[in-house]
Image 1 (spheres, helix red, strand yellow):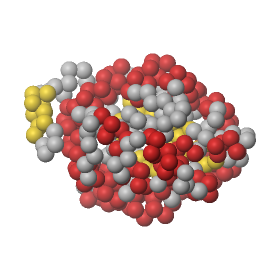
Image 2: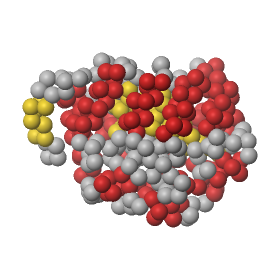
Image 3: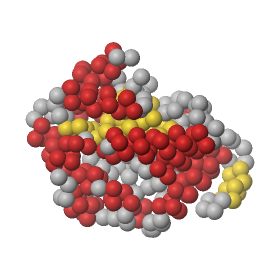
Image 4: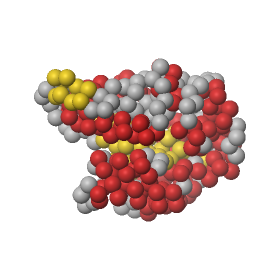
Amino acid sequence: MVDFGYHVLPEWFSPERIIEGLCLSEEAGFTVGWISDHFHPWFDEGAHCSFAWSILSATAERTRKIRLGTAVTAPILRYNPAIVAQAFATLDHLYPGRVILGLGTGEALNEVPVGCGWPSFKERLARLEEAVHVIRLLWRGGFVNFRGKYYRLKNAKLYTLSKTSIPIYIAASGQATAYLAGKLGVGLITLAGLGLNWLRENVLRSYRKGLADTGLSQAKTSLVVEVIGSYDEDEKKALKNCWPFAATLMPLIFRANVSDPREIALYGNMIREELIRERWVVSSKPEDHIERYSKLAELGFNHIEIVDISPDHRSFIKFYKEKIIPYFQQSR
């Protein structure tokens, strides 16, 4: 069974438009509203970059049932994991059962500009594992002491706790992070743009190995795959909207110490149109969207998170409400 999430980009839309899109997505049948948690955008010209946690709270107040989460928050440098624990516990206290915490190893464009530096991937992965431990300790309640390699807690206590259990997801594009997600027994978020073979042989296999090595192989798994999509009846317009994000098709951008949106935008000029069409969904034909998502469902993904970079978010949401979501609801 597959359901759909609607992912908005604070670097692409104004806060008002983000909230409107998330509210409309609830009405259209999307079950989760996702938002990127960025300090800098992927490009400079015409960009926004509002604070994700503020958007989550404002949207939750305007909606009734859609779950809301970050895709993803990096709780390792600019955010202390104890503050992440506090923020999301408060959100769930206010909107119980509707909050999801997506976590990851971060990107230089969000950490370096605020003076945090950019440690090696090995260190960031270790920090992420320790951060998840800190967050879970605090969510249990009571006074907590903790002395890890990177983080400390000294008689720390969350006085406002969540009302329900907040699901944690970890974003992974490679084997090490996918294995960690399985090892920690949390959900997985990955990218369709990596290609079906890479997802099958590296990401999913490593995640399931992490579950098995921790004795969780029989646990119900939550597998989220992120798909970037642009819809317009005029496909040239839909394709044009992809170019500001083209650099994200280069794995280097996620690993390297590149934090200036002006520089990142230049890398996007190196991307071929064919690669965008191959890795993302840029089409006005329902069958193209359905075919892509059906293949991902066959791999075992039970939640498809659509990143909307369309020229008109209202038309995109209407298209999914009428043509895409009903198809998968009927096929359950």
